[in-house]
Length: 245
Ligand SMILES: Nc1ccn([C@@H]2O[C@H](COP(=O)(O)OP(=O)(O)OP(=O)(O)O)[C@@H](O)[C@H]2O)c(=O)n1
Ligand SMILES: C[C@](O)(CO)[C@H](O)COP(=O)(O)O
Image (cartoon, rainbow, N blue to C red; front, side):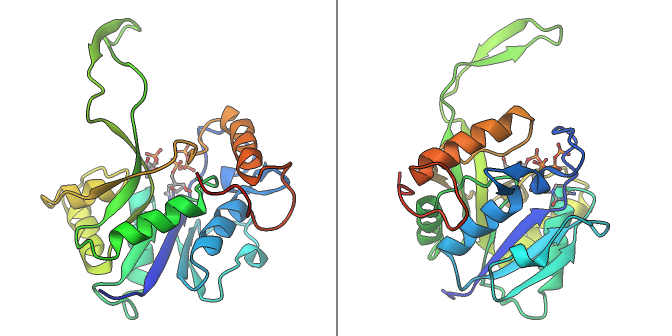
């Protein structure tokens, strides 16, 4: 299969659950804007990839000097995450081949390890359906009764947390997102759009510390994760040592 790799980074969210004065991708994390960490990790893993960065059209915080990729472009985000990703795919329609691999990674996941990125890519190179990084659920699962009390304990067997990146062939992913949009389906990740076509994306076991920064307390946790991954207090520059799980 083709070796051309596209990276789509949805970064057009407003960070409402974070409740900060600016979108969370611009908050400081270990001395740098959160987005810088995410882009640095992706670049460390795939320096020759082509990047498509989805940004809010009214974004005034972004600085193009943060982008380490030689081949990159900015596209406007959409109303939902899936709309941002669909815009990115439409923007590269004239260049992308149907079987090009597209990895979609949330800007809000700055702790993704280079080892996981490489493992996912290796698993997807000859995988026509595509797949995603995911982590098996480790806790006992409760269902609530709607009043704040437990209605039932659910089996965790076979349950996984969906992480990113999620990687699919360009043509398949574009078709899947268009079909989901036509059916007005709420898709919170790429895999669910592919599943709606009757296909089964591959689950690639990833590290649990590939945290999606969502709530205020996640920032401090992510700083500790980055420090542990680097094996030292975080400083400027590329994360290198102790990246392999
Ligand atoms: N219209 C949107 C909504 C989200 N995202 C991106 O999708 C990822 C996952 O979304 P989430 O964590 O929900 O981010 P926000 O939408 O920013 O957060 P919130 O839902 O709390 O507002 C983030 O990288 C976010 O920037 C996007 O590109 N376009
Ligand atoms: C894509 C994703 O990160 C997988 O866990 C997630 O679905 C996006 O988060 P959201 O909060 O639903 O936008």
